[in-house]
Image (cartoon, rainbow, N blue to C red; front, side):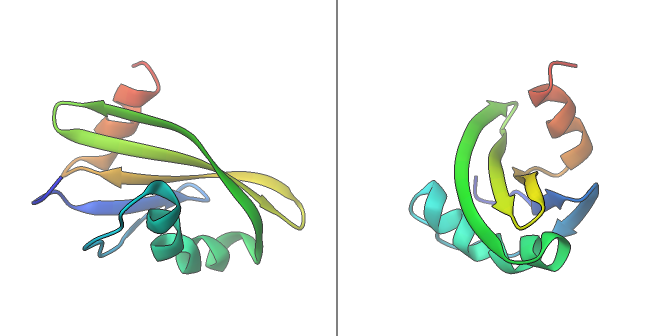
Length: 91
């Protein structure tokens, strides 16, 4: 995934993020957690919901629990994050 731009998609917004090394999906979420918390408030729990890849793009999808319920957060490795999400949503 080197050379790809990285975005956090949460609350219907793409936010650029710098990701160097992350090791596993939990480590990746720890890097983007501050951006997620800016949107939803304190994160009470998180689980990896799925990973989608195609054409060199990768989307990691998380289900985030917070005080009002649940929200989706996606980390998108792509030059075209909107297209990457469409690919992973089936069209």
